[in-house]
Length: 284
Ligand SMILES: [Zn+2]
Picture 1 (cartoon, rainbow, N blue to C red):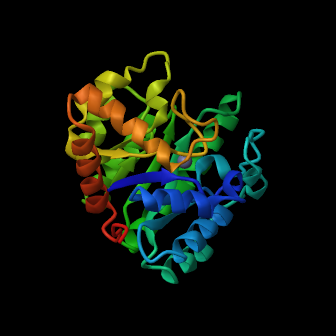
Picture 2 (picture 1 turned 90 degrees about the horizontal axis):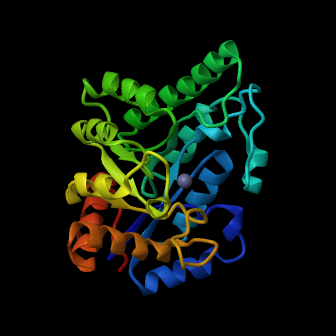
């Protein structure tokens, strides 16, 4: 059993064949959490999960890059980009969760993303402020429903950690920092706070100042989650449009770096997924 803890079969890239992809996964005993990025993709993730008794789940939330602040021109390589939201409409997300308590296993992906930021200082501050506002609202939502959070963070670890630290003192949060790209010091901070660390196909890329081998070596196996972030981040040599089966290549890579068997990494990361997302059940 394997769990792809961060997939987007709920995106339009899989509009025509998400059912086939799930069938392929079920044959290979690969469970999936489809992650929402706005209300539409969150709703779709829930709709997909509802079609299966087990093995397929949903996470709901508003991704910082799907927040229309009016301060930067948002770029999106997904048609989902048409559904930018100007505010976090808590009531509709709350209802989606409340009506599907057995399928919604997390809040996310939520967090901070400062990649496409405004140039002037004043606008930049306002932009960060707006992202933080909706992030905090969603952390509260997670708390209220006692759900873990799936964190997205780009060029903002310092500020994200600051927010989490203030929450962590009250032992209020648990979650995963998904597709971690950062340095060892930041990694250690997340681990100290008991967060899980998600690795995906980005570990095959060369990113200046990031040493994925050291990051994987430093993260204890009991804190690792595996994911794909499909349709993105396809591992080298894999299909152009990534899918949940691509998670096997990520497991292979981790196994190689940690000098463990593929089976051991698959087994332990599945155990971790079940520990964090307490509602998920294996495919039967
Ligand atoms: Zn994602």
